[in-house]
Length: 239
Image (cartoon, rainbow, N blue to C red; front, side, top):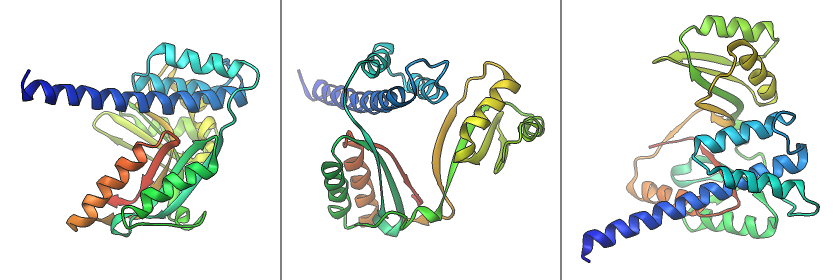
């Protein structure tokens, strides 16, 4: 059927594989959260946030429901949080967050991504101190002063607040995530967040310009994205 058909077929397969990885990551995080904090989103704010995030990534409703149903049953898989740190291509700093049922396997897989791209995996805490562990909320709005006032009245320790192009971004310590979220919901009502999550924000960035480093950086990210255990990758690289 010609090369054009083959290209389209490969593109569709790649999209399908990528969707499967996204669904799997969301499903796993929802399962773990529901297993530990309860399967009712109204009583488990963390679960509600994960479900909203999954919906924004267009995860089908049946995938979300299956993860919650699985968590409501007895037994099930036992996942643990694992975090790996090190230096990536161009000496950028990297944090890899995982959910795993086999830490030895996950560590081996993540370490391979480092070693195959001439990077070095470090010990826990080796680079995390160069990132701010922040709760981040992005939503429609233009009155950042009113938002700041509402958060201060709720005794939220706001790190920073920005307003640009009709979007307000609120930064708070990761420990203030639920408090900040609740204060925003109470002040703004049924708001839809563009971003509603906890991230590691680098305190400084490293510009990568060398072509070999750029190629390794792309390969490094692709290898990590292909790992089902990897949930998030944070770095301070500036491409």
